[in-house]
Length: 346
Image (cartoon, rainbow, N blue to C red; front, top):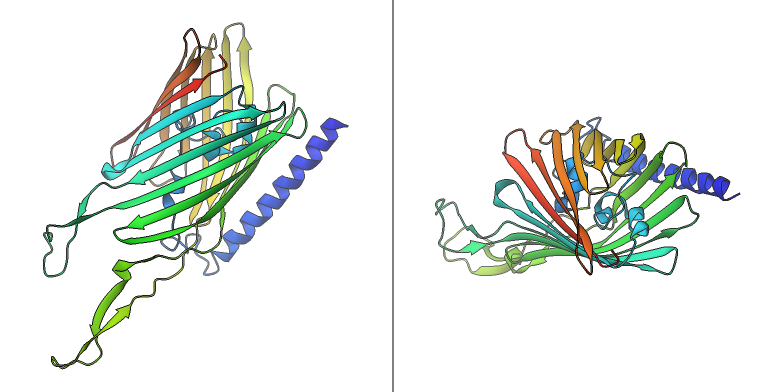
């Protein structure tokens, strides 16, 4: 009976999520152009992946994610936290930008877990330029994004997990900012056959956001003559939305013998402001200590191949994992990620 309930719930939520994503995608492509909304959405930093493990597999972890990086890939993975855990993730991003992620989580009772998390994305200082001073004015500004959130996940049955994330995001450019609440939802289903696991998630559910701040205030002349009096004016920015993302993945144990385990995975990803992407990847684990990963993403105009390694460590009072990944880009060099996780229950 539990297995039947798991299948029904999983397929029902999959259908709801798929239909919601398809509706949004069709709405964004009424012109016949699959990328009609590119440049019209904000919060793009939410599309930057967390976790060196997932990036080492080129994003093929929607069905197998089971640590705090699940906040990005599929919030249902938080349900599998074994004990009080924490993680820090650093990404040396394109163009000198930095991307940081920190999270802490703990199980709640036997069937649920909760995690708090913080994400930041920053340009560092940039110099103001104007038409009159294209080389710079001598003053600087920053573009930065921040998200702080809470994820709750749990088991409905021993095979079916769900997760929900709520985030408050704040995007800043100089003295302007825009804030709002964003929701993600996801599920995972373990079939019990050859380690086959299914995962599906929907990301970026929010209302429209808009910028406000001092930089939108200015003074203008209502009439061309030089003697005309300046009047105060305020620019009205256009509203924008967060891109809705949809992920569906499947993973399976393709080789498992004594100290050796190989998992293969396939993921489908699409956002409301970009075309579909497909990823294939694999992870080899030796003795539950050393992991080697590789994968390839199809349909992305910047990223393709990904690779990484992971090492588990154990001290007298706690254990954890150190993961590292590389993601070569087509034109912008290498993106390096380092993740350090601590598990106080090991």
